[in-house]
Each structure stands twice: as C-alpha cells, then as structure tokens.
Image (cartoon, rainbow, N blue to C red):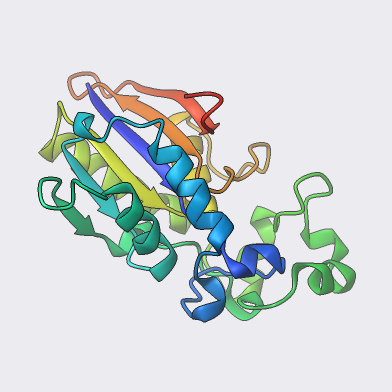
Amino acid sequence: MTTIDWVRHGQTHANVSHMIQGQLDTAVTLMTSTGERQVQDLLAHLEMTDYNRIVVSPLQRTRQTAAILTTGSADTLPLTLDQRLVEGDYGDWTGQSTAELQKRYPDAFDPLTHEVLPDWLPRTGGESYRQIQARVGQLVAELVVDHPYEHILVVSHGLTIKLAALLMLGLGTSQALPEPRNASLTRMTIDPATGHRYLRGYSLTRLGL
C-alpha cells in the first residue's frame, strides 16, 4: 500500500483577513505566529520517522510549514517541491476580500462553507475543479507507481487537498466536502496492485490523530 498524508499549511495573515489567496505568494500569505504554533502542535502528534519522503507545494506558506515539520529530520527526509501542489488559481478574485465578493456575487458562494462554488471558478479566469484535480491526480499516480509501498508526506493547500480527497471518493466537482482546516492531516491509501483508493481520514487535528 502507498499511504499519502496531506497537510494543509498553518494559518496565514490572508486567512485571518478572509482574503482569497489562491496562488498569491506575498507577505500577506505568510504564516502567522498562530499558524506556526498550529504546525508545531501537529508535529508533536506525528512520528516523522514513519515517512519515506516529503513533497511540498513551492509557495512560501507551504515551505514554511514543511520547514517546521522537518525540524530535526531535514537531512534524512528527502524533500521535493512540486508545482502541481500549488493552490487553485482564483483568477481575478485572487487577493480580494471574500466578504466583499460575497456581497457582489452572493450566488457564487456556498451558503454553509462560504467557499467559491465549482461552476464559478472558471468565470473568474481561474482554474476549474477538473483542472486542479487533474494535476493533483497525476502527481498521486506518479507517487503510487514510483514509490508503491512508501509512506509519503505532502504539504499543500485547502482546495488542492479537498480535490485530492474527492478523487479518492470518485467525485469531481462537488462542494459537499468543505476544505480541510489549517495544519490538519488528511490520509489516503492506494493499493498499487488493484488501484483501490481509500480516504482514511480528513481534516484531522491532534484530537483525531
């Protein structure tokens, strides 16, 4: 079995101000001190020696998260940056206030999660759910083929991890699953021989690990 643990980055300044980050990679998307503590708390409940390698989105907030998680093991745990793990592209809405956008486009947001609905992402000039899921799915397939019996840690983003989880469930453009929490862990297992996929845990914090 190939086991992939996905960790969402810790809280950022943009998260606090309810800004759509997308692929924005500036000072406002860096982690807050709370975000750093969230990741440190997660680390306290992980056994890093269980992992064979770590694959990370190249954006600063995920690299910050990975740096905390690999404290003490950076020299022994192979780390790779992979562009396919970046957050979804929100097009013209990148860097804008979620509250202001909800006022202007109330039909574009889920009433419960307040996330942008799948059909609206392409309208902003960004990526569709299918496009994001395709690049994430390609990475997952490569990891299973190249490292079939390894335990792999992946550090990525809310929408990216959500779509990886939906892929495990055989779903595509569904808003039924909310994005995982900051510094949470989502675990999936794939059988290299049969291709069977299992979503074993989603948005787990220290209380669920």
